[in-house]
Image 1 (cartoon, helix red, strand yellow):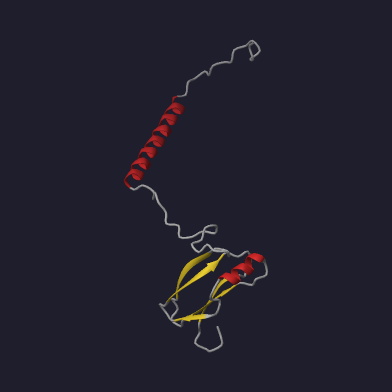
Image 2 (cartoon, rainbow, N blue to C red):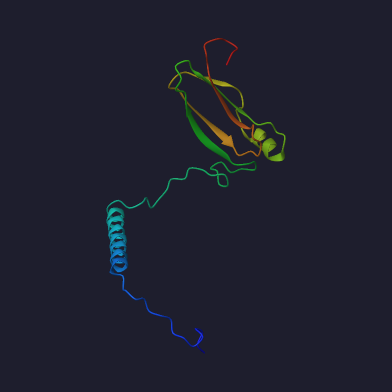
Length: 141
């Protein structure tokens, strides 16, 4: 069955060599880009391994409570730093975090001092680590 209604489609009057030249040029640039990227990746391949220390679902401290994630903090302020963990306990997940994190008290650190603690995944936006730069006045942070 002839879909054109019995008539043949007319051929173009003139042939365009400019379109063919541009097409061949674009394909040449594309092939050149592919070769350059292949050579660059062969010389410096993407990393094949990653060092995942923790994630939301698989923390290193898996126990009966929610997973806790180790974190190391460094105080960089000349005045010193104050840091505290806070978990409100308003939801079951937050309550398990409050029960599982050992030290929730405020800790002060001098400049350059390193502190290690463990964070817990909580579903409350205000739960987590609070940090402040000390301004040298007692009682004010």
